[in-house]
Image (cartoon, rainbow, N blue to C red; front, side):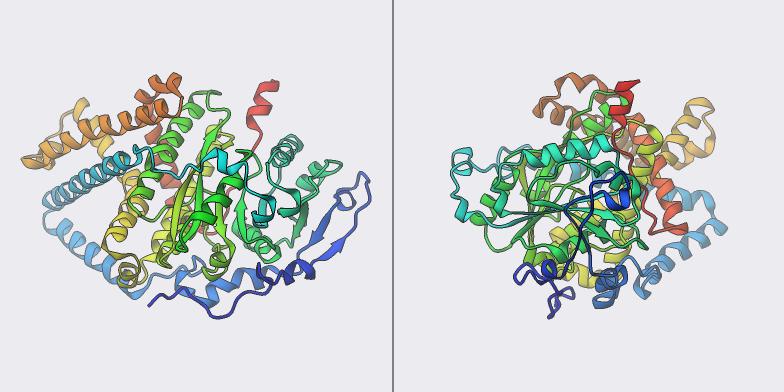
Length: 517
């Protein structure tokens, strides 16, 4: 029995369009005052609480709002922590050796899983590539109404100006488009940036009431209630989507089976050569969107959605209760929830270019938010592990563990092994030799040497496949990048405890600022 389904549909569904009619229009004069400067603006008639409480009231165990562990989770924690604490008191060296052995086995299993996914992702048909001749000749009357949501927060004028140019270049009939820029009502910076800019005829600004939770998914929920389209996509402030992406997505939805609820377009970077950090980031995205996610698609495994360029059947989006406003990686959480509904997410062969984070502090904030959201998602969906297993089945359940649990696990545990390796090289203490004796030594060496080589080689393959051959040499330095990911993971773990719902704003336009210096 699936616990996500609800009988009542939220007010303002795509079918009725009532929410769009309920919007109260706000007319602004063209003045210098940001409170009276933004044209084509409407205010959301909904308060934040009515939007944010939907998921947590309908299915409280599937909302990140609830911070407590379930009885089952406490049982698992007790079964692991209890014997470990007892073992430390009785024989700490043996206990540590057992944990090193278990961790080594898990490492090898995750590496084998990753390589198998990459093998599937290498297939030519691992992503759906609609035929161009059919795309360009789809009759206008056959194209569905498409809603485009773009959440904005504290954006620079140059960023929103380039965004509007990119949206205006989308090759889709204007009369079939329904778009909203989602702006917090008290966000004077973004409203000032929008002042005087020409918006496409199909695009307007939806003012979101300020207040907690101040997150992207909360803004998206306001936009969803106003949406009139049959399908919906989300773009970020710095996005430059493929001009034909909406037509490609429409073609897939029109030709796919009823189980397909979501399409994930590929993401790439337009400033991937800005500095060493962006080169690493570019290599990571090449691997993730060119090999790993297509491999999950080919295996019919749950796909952790990216935060942008995902395309939804809006009816299914309503039935799934859409985004969790308290989960700071709402996209990955929604991808898993769709899988639990028995719905399929597929990869779309269409690329949206984004801005790679070029400043380390900004990158750490962004990555720690992603990692914190993964940890939130794991906690939420393992509250009833037997129900999760029943919803997904054995194969998808194993994929969930490898992707959602395995990623944070490796990022958090790896620095401990790196420290021990450094200590062994410097001082060769006897206790490290005792920990890695026997089969553990050979398994660990295999994991370290062959595993590192395999993962770096996979990134190299992805870069070459995506036309980023000039970045190939930088793949040799990826272990340093992995260390930065581990730093972000520990920041995420601390924040999960201290402020789980805090949304770190990613600053956009850094590549523009640097180019002007």
